[in-house]
Image 1 (cartoon, helix red, strand yellow):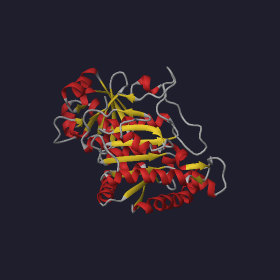
Image 2 (spheres, rainbow, N blue to C red):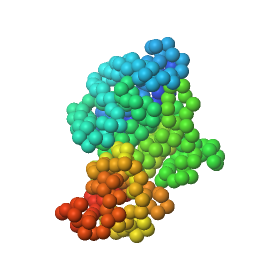
Image 3 (cartoon, rainbow, N blue to C red):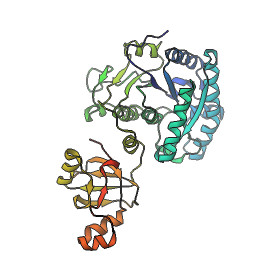
Image 4 (tube, one colour):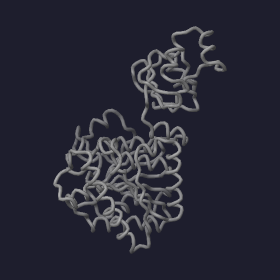
Length: 369
């Protein structure tokens, strides 16, 4: 049995390609078998676990006889399609001895941007973990163009953690943690806040099969932390790495979660959306948003960038062009331009029934600083 020193009822475990494979296209059966054993210890403590598993593209490359990640998008998609079936079969095979059932869930960013699909994904995950089933989540790289070029399972794992309100996210890869490259070259055990100086310590990856590196791990930690989820980054090959973490030994780096998780709708606005444009505001409007909890009015806007429609997500930038908030615009970019160019009587004629001309209502806005 595993002794948990603190309350942990929902945990997301993300595993990188380097941990799950022993070479291009070669599944690391022993490693996966061991990870399954450790996750089973959590399940015996009635902890609900979601696994975010990389490896489909790498396994597909091996099956198709490729030595490096293809440059052609369709070829990468084909690798993912071939490798995903191998990946899910491997997880079920190694969870089987523990009586654990797995379920496959393939997601794209669009699945989480659309409010309806976002809620459907959440409800599916909730149903699975409540039934004691272990979801194996991966990006749907075989059909998603944008995700293969820009997506990363580190970020996906943080979104899943936010989606199910996980207590902890474990990012297990070949990285031992965040290295203090500007100092003693050792792993930093605890990061209380992801600052610009912390971000400077991150580097990318040169792996033939992986994408991302420490840069995306920090991005993932930031998203999860701001949703109230603690994040561990550790080397997944370390013996008993999961029991070590939950025994308080911390073999890697722990990122301390923010004080209070964002309300569900605002988490969706903050982390799951691709903004369609940006409005820049003056100092007075910035102060009203940050310090007074006000909605964004048209009179505070100094510039509009992008072509967006009513109901789309936009960024709100301060006078220094720093993004301070994100929200749902109640006016299109062209309508905002009209409002700024006309006097109040003309505006009322254009938009009857609207008196305050709130571009973004406070209830549909999340602060990013």
